[in-house]
Length: 267
Image 1 (cartoon, rainbow, N blue to C red):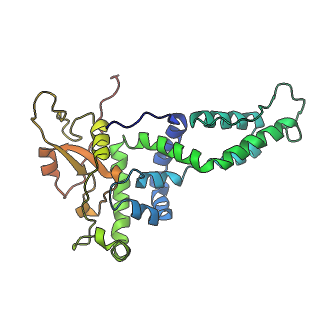
Image 2 (cartoon, rainbow, N blue to C red):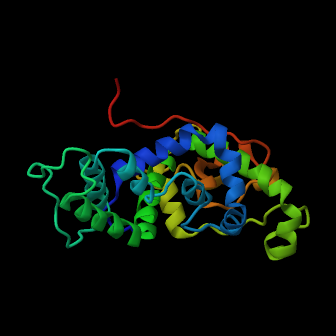
């Protein structure tokens, strides 16, 4: 069953994704450590809220609009709020400031515009959790396409799993093998579909066709990018689509993936 269409905050999402990826090598370990318990709980078996979603929390906070209001022009802060609310499909029944007719010369601190924008900021604060969740979900759509980043992220996550294995065994023993690795869990249909769609029906490594539209020549395998044997996890963002030959060759010994994708057009 195909996922339902939904309105995505793609402009805000790509901004958050870019921020999170660009700062990963400086702040990745710190961010993972901040949400350590939440991440460990979500990587034991495939879930729709992934370790990446928790990582994005480290960078996403719509409450910063209040700081922007205090440090920038009021009209720019208002435009930002309106743009964000339109992206997440929230339409408050609030008055609109008339900046052009306002005779306040120094930042709109004592005029009606100020009072109106405060109402918009209050609305954002009231809906902060919902807005942040939608922007994180939108950012994930971009990051999930970047297998190289997912590889690097899950290598860092593997270090966490290895360091915290005693904690995991104590609190989630049913998810741990006798070799002190996370136990393999079944892949739900929605995850298989998502990975197949991301890879456009081809093997992530050799790019052979796995669509089987003409004949069943190649068998589909869902692979852990960072193998469980190397302290990888069952997190939904740690998966890639491989053919049988590449999956057998990779096994549980390497973290091989590829940055090759099919562009919308070639330059």
